[in-house]
Structures are given as C-alpha cells and as structure tokens.
Image (tube, rainbow, N blue to C red; front, side, top):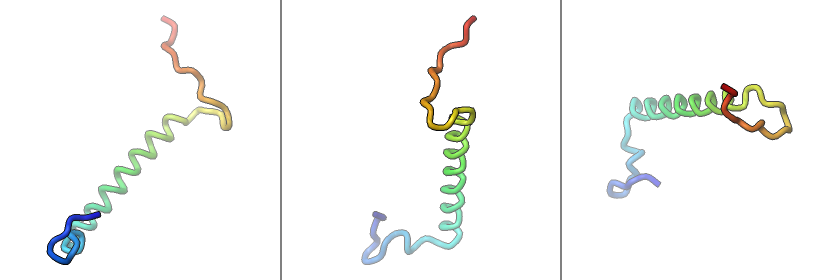
Length: 58
C-alpha cells in the first residue's frame, strides 16, 4: 500500500515524469536480475541438478 495524503494515495500525486522514471528503474532492475539468473544457469543441462561447484584443482 502507498502512503496516504488526506483522502488520496501518494501515488496519485506523482507527476508523469516521476512515474516514467520509476517504471524505467524497475525495468532496468528486472533486466539485471534476469541477466544474472540466466548467467547462473547458462551451461546447465535441462532437468538435471546443478553440478557441485568446487574450487578448481591448483
């Protein structure tokens, strides 16, 4: 829920520019999340558990 100002929600008082900036920020944040998730599972075979990640032999 948003904060309330009198009888109106705070979101109703935001300008179009502020709403647009918020939407762009959320889309960018979601794109970063999707990119990190796809990188995490990039080379994994479907329907198989992830291989054990261990330190490479030195």
